[in-house]
Image (cartoon, rainbow, N blue to C red):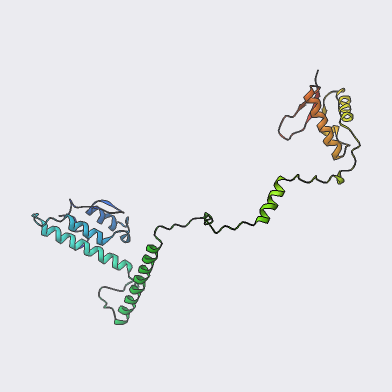
Length: 240
């Protein structure tokens, strides 16, 4: 009995599994075409579905039982061969009997896998309802310790006036905003002036005050600041 010969009397038998839902004979076809892994098919659940749908009084009940028993045995054999270690090409595993040493080795491996699976099952059952998370757990009530000295220091820093930043490195201010505004008006008398050309011979302090004076004149309506693109050259234009 092979998988190919199953399905004559089982054409109306359908199965509902997690990996497949449909006619039983299509399930066998998918396994034969290797479109469905035999590991994914729960054989015990498959047998249970057949027993729950079995009708002993049907006219072809014996033929259905025979076909299903043969196909189920073929599935068990296929799954067992897949689980077995690979053999060398040309070696006939069916005709060669296993020695006691080989049988003991396979039994030991089976026991190791079975015990490992049982240990994992117990661990999963013990961790049921617990899920890993990257979030930190909030402190439990009664375990939070507050240092009063640190709270007072934090309040003092929050509500006290911040210290004035040092300005000794700036040096004395020798130019006023009014003087630079007058300088800008004189330069605009000849037409538009690029800002870079206006502050070419100035230090950083005078350049900053000149820019502030240009903003003040533009706000008062004495000139217009033109910049064709963001962060591009800035031009000062007189208003006609």
